[in-house]
Each structure stands twice: as structure tokens, then as C-alpha cells.
Length: 75
Image 1: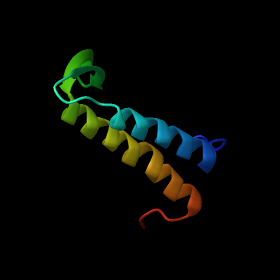
Image 2: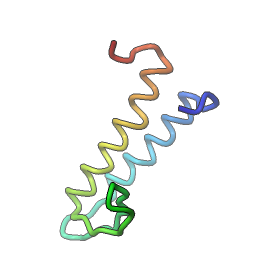
Image 3: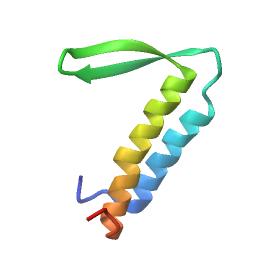
């Protein structure tokens, strides 16, 4: 985690991710870049798959960092 990142910045970034989820359209596909042990590739995701991916990012990146800054991380 970047020590310079504030809770306000993280909340703003979280709002951006949640806004992306809100704008997803049923029946549409979305491109996503996936990086794993096989390298980096572009995949197509349905709206529900994209929502799941974005919500995982929101939880793992932003919510966990905010909890850590505030001293609420799991022990």
C-alpha cells in the first residue's frame, strides 16, 4: 500500500469502481485484461462476470486498504 494514499482518495477510487458496476448493461460483453501465470491476455466478460470482477477489486483493493488505514484489519 502506498503510504501517501489517503482514505479520501481510496473512497473516491471506490466510488469510481462502483459507478462502473452501476453502468453495466445486461446482455453486453466487456473487455478485460487478465494477467496470470500464463501471461497477459484480453478476455470478454458478461455484465455479471464484469460486476463480480469489479466488486472483487473493490473489496480486495479499496475496502481492505481503508480498513488497514483505520486499524480495522482482521487479526
